[in-house]
Length: 104
Image 1: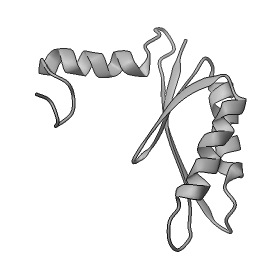
Image 2 (image 1 turned 135 degrees about the vertical axis):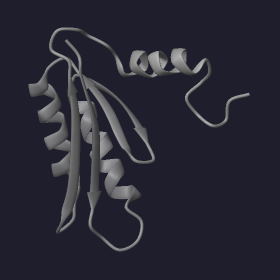
Image 3 (image 1 turned 180 degrees about the vertical axis):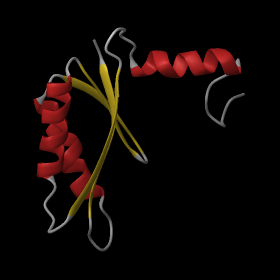
Image 4 (image 1 turned 180 degrees about the horizontal axis):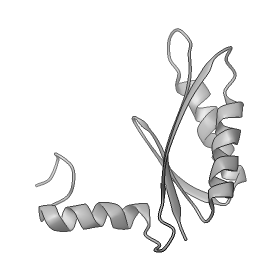
């Protein structure tokens, strides 16, 4: 089973959040998850929901701010296993092209 999630952890501060977001992303390395950060959050793949929750909690707790906003969107396919890349590839198959605007 693979659990896929979109995690967004952001300190509520003035100015750039990138330093604190980097701390959240760095915290994920302590867990048995794979991840890829994009401009709107980090896609995480874990083998179990427990591992996913532990990694997300660590990312949330790694941010040093008086207020932290965290959003976690979970896709928990319980009878099949599909990676995040496979999900994108399925969409691209229907499109007949890459799923981004910079295609040739």
